[in-house]
Image (cartoon, rainbow, N blue to C red; front, side, top):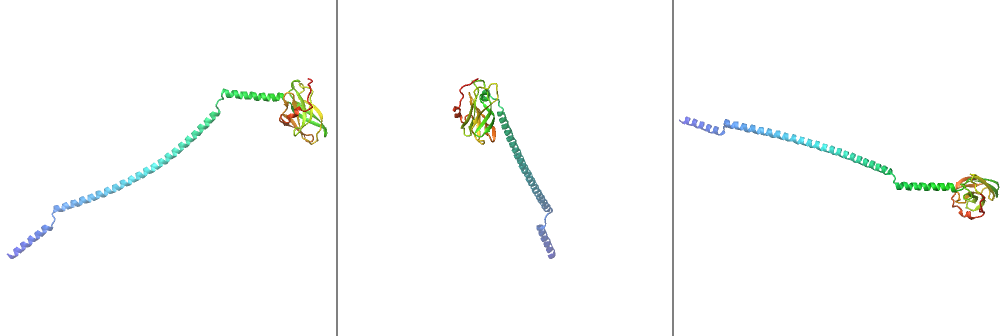
Length: 258
């Protein structure tokens, strides 16, 4: 009896220990399923992380593209705006130039035309008066000896008779002092231009003088001759007011024959 009892005890112990340490098939399957779920979960997490990374990268790329596109668009807009501003400026300048041209081409008013016509009439009248009323010297020749020259003076004058005619020609120093005067005794209506001689003119060969003519109605003429016997005489212009006081000096006309 002793050995059977020991054997039974050993068997019982083995069974007890085996029951404590042995895992049932269901437990193993459950563990395997949990392990598979964990692996799947980790795989999903990894895939999700990879997708998230790709999405973030794609998003960054899109943002970069958008940013670059926006910068390019902004540069294009800035360039287009600058071009438009330049076109507007050119258009304004062209418009201003056109306005200036138009302003310069504005038709004259009637009043402006009347004023201009009046001025033109007055100017023409003044020119006509000068041409009609002044006696001008057209030539000068001198002959003889120093201190006793004879001058032959050509004159153009609008003579109409004794009421309007060239009544003398004269020789003056450069300072306006009267040297000689040749009084004309009648008009030269039918003899234009005409030449009359006179002397003696008491000057040196190299003395510079003025030779001018006088009209009984309008005074001294503008066209004169200047120079010397030695250097000859040339046409010039002289103010009618030059040495005008000489008009009161003798000799003076004491009548007109015709």
